[in-house]
View (cartoon, helix red, strand yellow):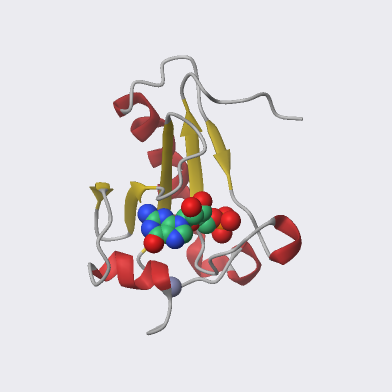
Length: 112
Ligand code: 5GP
Ligand code: ZN
């Protein structure tokens, strides 16, 4: 999608603080961090949200889920981490390109 912010970040057309990338995903620092560590993981493919995920995305989703603990460990999150995927306006999604938030560190609040 040509007018999608995260597609532009994935292509390098908008700068981001990238911490990991491969042929399937890009991981970068959230511009407005809500915790000491706040990363966003996006697929290179434009998928608007979990609502648009299909069976053809199974390998991609597994790749994303398996990468999250590796990235958390690389960020030094020895005690654990939080993963959030907001879906749709009612779920608090603002950017309509699928992304997983990876949060952790000292300032991570309780989940109420
Ligand atoms: P959502 O509410 O859609 O789940 O989260 C979108 C996230 O994208 C927010 O946490 C917001 O801070 C982040 N964000 C929005 N625009 C940019 C940007 O241009 N660069 C980066 N690195 N993060 C962004
Ligand atoms: Zn996109």
